[in-house]
Image (cartoon, rainbow, N blue to C red):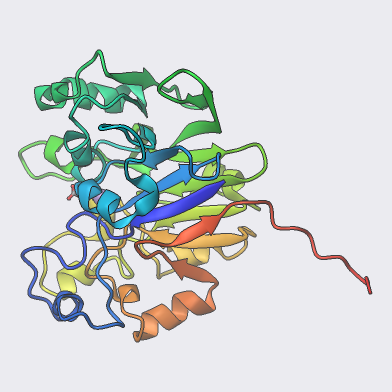
Length: 319
Ligand code: MLT
Ligand code: MN
């Protein structure tokens, strides 16, 4: 299975349109240690790039397609190697790109019932005409084969599983109160497999728990929520009043942080994605980047290509 990082940043991207913070300005100036990143999404393929499935449709999907040759049309006057989109939540940065994918191009959207309810209760998504774009509901824990628009099997299977999270920002109650962190169909992780290797895509997660740890233990490849380095970094930087916990994201540092949570899980390849523009790991010359490097994490970047295959066990004592 091939995986291609289309965008590595969290909602707002890097630089964010209204941010005058130094890190964003470094990205704008083209500083090589602060490369710009679009909003989080990856593409996966089991047939050597003939067909691709997007994990989430970022608001930047048009730019992402134009920057990635494998996702561009190859035949006829209208076509796309993008066979489907799998959604892990209803946040703006996960679904807004669906509006860009209009133009009567057949593909399938896979999501939980709850996330499909978000789409069907916002009539603007009807621009994806029902006779062209199929919407398939995936139950938690169900193993689904992803099909191509012509009905053939793509070679990929997917399972969606609940992770701790909260309701999308625009669905929070108007009183400003913090919504509860829950585990259900609103925020999910995806396990995508081609029968040889499995990758996990978890761009939003509020906490590690025993069930999630058990699921990820020994995994080939995990893309994980890299939103913030410190829970209060946005507050401290004067960027806003919200902590990571308030936004439904666990942070990298701290006793209950992501680095600590993964330390003994034996995941073979760990890649941070959905990285907020306030997170210093975006800067190649920051001490925080050195820390995540030392902890064995990679920081996703736009255009990063990964081959997902089981890592062969090293032969002991061989010649
Ligand atoms: C998040 O990941 O917390 C959301 O994407 C925030 C947002 O909707 O801007
Ligand atoms: Mn987000």
